[in-house]
Length: 341
Ligand code: DAH
Image (tube, rainbow, N blue to C red; front, side, top):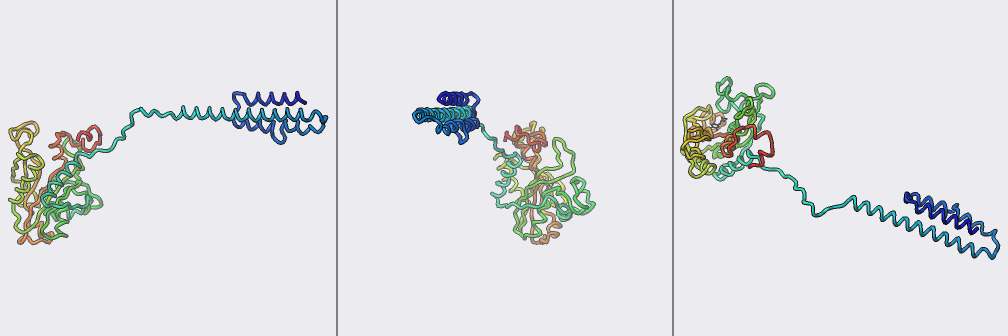
């Protein structure tokens, strides 16, 4: 019986200490030898048949065998746990000295920069911001601005029509003028930045979508002198203290008189250079005194009130300021371009 016990011990320890023994296998081994129906238990059950003097000796050996097996299982379990931990540590190794990854955050688009700058300048002069829809009625985009159906001025502002010929994508932010004057009575001082659309083919200076900023002031006794003074302040703030402005006669259906406004070239100071194409002057906006027809159509008495208006392209201002020679750059969203501003 003693040999039997020794051979149980030997084969149990052998199995326990095999390299590929894992936790599941350990449990199998425990059940096989120490479980209720296990081999060692079977031997202990047979003790009754032994001679009385043999019982304590065999009993002691059986206990030793049990203890040895239990101890071997516990040790193996511990070494399995240690190996697992080792593996996990290796796997999850973290080198705290490796430089961190910088997450890239966005950058303000040059058009947004210019828009905010202009807003600041005009808000500083008492204007507030008014917004209008990009999907607009023909009425506000054209008719209320003294451009009736079939007026030739529509040719230069051909746009995209939504449903029929009554709803379109606005071709100018001037549409906001009519909306504001309809609702609000003088004194009015607003600027209106936003997207406008024209059915132009894309090239270095044209885009079917671009941005404008409109300005409007209506009150009693407003003159062209007010317009000039205000634009001069704007030009000096935006392009530098030495900047001069120049009015050239022009025609817009919604202003009378109308002018195109130039600034003296801020690169060469007016001597003539690449930026101003040798002219010394750069055109930046259109302006004029609000046409009496426009005031009347919006329910404002032209005998009592007068006003000035102006409109400029934000892309044009940004291109001049930042020396960008292709309008397409604004819309391509190449971070290498955008990051420069
Ligand atoms: N809306 C004109 C355009 O898109 C720009 C403009 C010119 C606006 C003169 C005005 C203005 O308010 O008085 O070409």
